[in-house]
Amino acid sequence: MTDSSTTGLRAGKGMPGLSYPEEYLRRLASELTGKFSGIFGAETVERYVLGSYTGLLRTSTVKAHLAANTTRFATDRLTALAQAKGAIETPVPEVLFVCEQNAGRSQMAAVLTNALAGGNVHVRSAGSAPAHELNPAVVAAITELGLDLSEAFPKPLTDDVVQAADIVITMGCGDACPVYPGTRYRDWDLTDPADLPIEEVRIIRDQIRKNVEELLTGLGITPTGLPT
Image 1 (cartoon, rainbow, N blue to C red):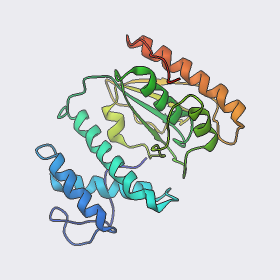
Image 2: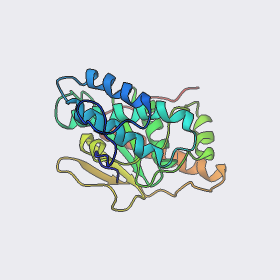
Image 3: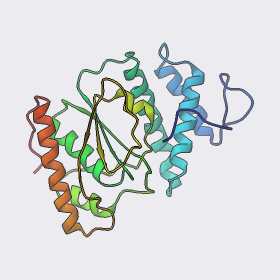
Image 4: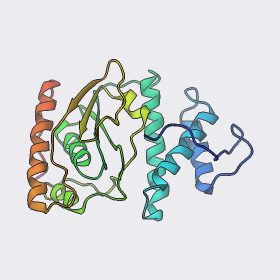
C-alpha cells in the first residue's frame, strides 16, 4: 500500500534541502496549501503532493496525463484525510471500491454508483496493485450505457481514503485493505474482467449494476435511471 510519506523527495519552506522533481509540483503544493489552510500545514501538503506523484509515476505510461492526474489524486487524498479528521463535513455516505488493479471492477462500480445515486453518495476507487491503464473492454462496456470513464485512471490504495470511507467494498484484493473501526466492509465476489472479451465483461458490468442498486437501496437511496 502507498503511505503518505515520501522518501528522498523534499521541497519548499516546510521541507528544505532538496528540489521538486517537476516544477508543477511546487505550484500544486502552494495551491493546495492555500486551499487547505487552517487544516494542514505546508509540510503535510508537500508530503502528500510528492507521495501522490511518486505513487502514480510507478504505473503511468502517458506522462502527458501525469500532471493532471497528480493534481486530482493529491487533492482527493487531502480531502479524504480532512474528512477522516472531521475538518470537512461529509453530508452523504462515502463509499470506497477496491480491487486489485483499479482498472475494471472498482472503476465500473464507481461510475455506476455515481450515475445511479443521484448525488446522494460520494464515491472513490483504488487498487491494491494498480495497472498502467483502464481495461479497454471495461471502458467500452461502460460507454455502451452512456457513461464516461475518460477521466478515470488507476490509483494506488492509500490509508487516507480508507479512513474517510463509511463503506469499503472489496473485489478480489485479498487482505490489502486495512481495517478501521467504524467502517463497514463488504466483499463482492466478482470475476476479474482482465483479458476477457467484451461479451463476458458485459455480464460482470450488469452484476455490478445489480449490486450497486442493492447497496443504494440498503442505504435508503432510490437508484435513478441511467442516461438514454
